[in-house]
Amino acid sequence: MKIEEAKVAASTVEKVSPTEAKFILDDTMRAVKAMKASWLHVAINLKKIRNDELWRFAKPQVVSYDSYVLDVLKLNKYVAARMLRAMEYSEEKRPGFVEDFESNPGRDVPSFDVVDQLRRVEDRFVDRPSDFGDLEKSVFDEGVGRTILKRRIEEKLTPAVSSYEEEPEEKEEPDSPEKVLSDLKVIERRMFKLKEIPEEAREKMYELVSIIAQHSD
View 1 (cartoon, rainbow, N blue to C red):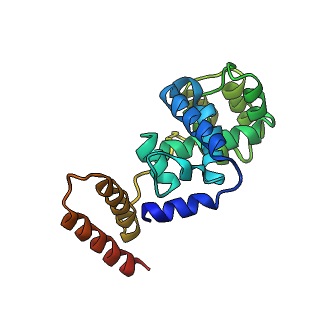
View 2 (view 1 turned 90 degrees about the vertical axis):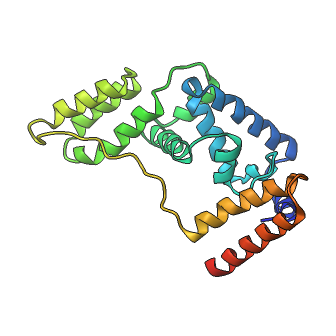
View 3 (view 1 turned 180 degrees about the vertical axis):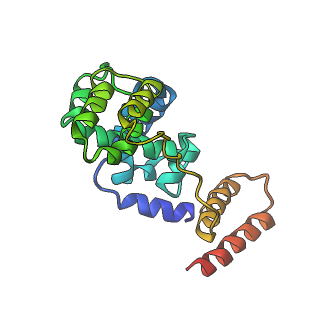
């Protein structure tokens, strides 16, 4: 997507004003820098930015939500995804969780990694709701960390399960024409802004992007 096309796309976003979008984008950037204390703040904003396509208002301009997360926030997209899942799961287990936080941003909340750890093990306790309820309370009411939660999971699964191993974290997506194309478009946009790069090089990049785009359709 060229810069001109991005501007046209941005004009179609009518859910919020540019001023409101800029406030949310700036607010998210500040919260990311204080991630350890405010992951829920970041997740709440990221959901708005993704759902309402507020990333179209970002400066420098980006071509997608994932590009905004990676290039502007400098945030691993898998970390961002886990935060969003942790927020939604917390709201599922504790209705009003997000509203309570927004009314009292200083309140303690469990780490998103611990919430995601709890979410990923829930299916092992389908027939043991009482045991899982204890784990849930330890996360949301006691604020235990990953190590303590893992030990409590192991204790409850023994001897029903000989050993407990966490599910592996998500791995980077394998390369694909679509992924390469997305990366090249970001590079093309950067090249377009640099006067030091010869016009011939920019034309070659445009041709390369066009060729790959045709074979990706």
